[in-house]
Length: 219
Image 1 (cartoon, rainbow, N blue to C red):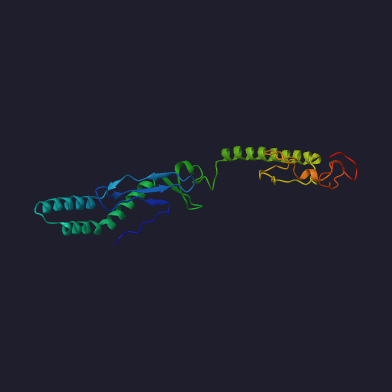
Image 2 (cartoon, rainbow, N blue to C red):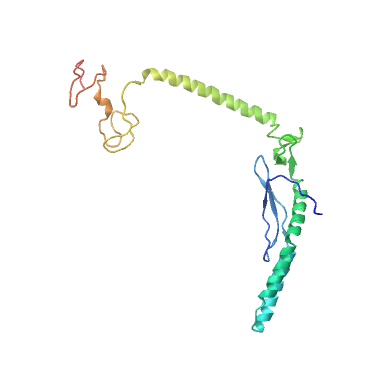
């Protein structure tokens, strides 16, 4: 009876079943940093022998003007029959070696590399972060938060000089460029929506008016 294989799902099968490059190799990854480790490549001799036998038979039969495809197919079938067991055995060996490169966290059950492992606590750095690193990160977050709060307060102070009631045309109707709320289009110079109201009393200005009809301010 084949022994059961236990391991996390953080691996990639790189095995090749056919051809002279047939063999077994597995790539394992760290759950935390995603760095990978590959098991040493193990050649699958059954597929290589089938390939060599097939080529030899085809060459021999070719000299006689006949084909040896039937013999080659039989050799490939024989090699394929043993592939599954050979792969499982190679996978077990790869897991045994991978266990020296990865640690299983008892809290989150993830497999992590040695760089992501808190050896002093026997737990991964996701579950038990490095205290010094957390302190530095927290200090930087505190600095950033404080600067953000001060910048927000400065923006609130600047709001006193910003006319929030003034109409603004964000896209020039003449050339279609963004205006960023300016009185004139920065691309073509077209006068925008801001000229439709008096700068002094905010009254609506008739088209072509040189002075405000309400307060007399020059346009």
